[in-house]
Image (cartoon, rainbow, N blue to C red; front, side):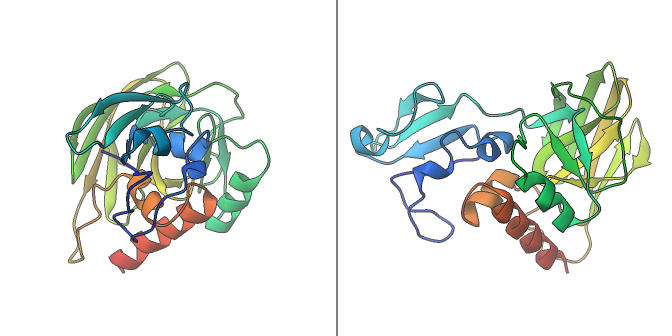
Length: 231
């Protein structure tokens, strides 16, 4: 689940990743990238990894180290500090502004969903996860937007407590659903059309890494790639 590979070859494009792309990068953490693989020798390739962000869990027989990202955000969480955007370009502009932090704020392509708030996000519980269906439970004291750090993709539909509810693009490439205060069940299900299904359950972090970098431009490329597949 969500690995990048400093010191190894990127499985998507054959290039070596730049460690600076994910060290202390809030977009990397917000996409719930939980671990990285570091190729040998670790004394060289892991030298620039800060100990307060990455912890060595194990070393495989071939010398590859698995480091846990201690800053990774939950895969599903409810955001209250939500900004509205009228389009993908509007969302990109908002996310590029100085001070925007995707770990505590979210940009949703929808009309104003929530009143202004500085409340930090609250983790949601993932009750069931499959390639074509995700079931989650939220418990909050105020309304928010449930954000799943999986790729926004045409064909996904959502239900809130068994009733249809819209899925919004969040931070350009993620999936979001508005949830009221209290305890609620959210189901996201893919109801397939006759299209290529290879990217249905792909974590957004994998898509963004495969398209180079961990920021707004890569998120936009990831979304265009998904839209093209579904067309």
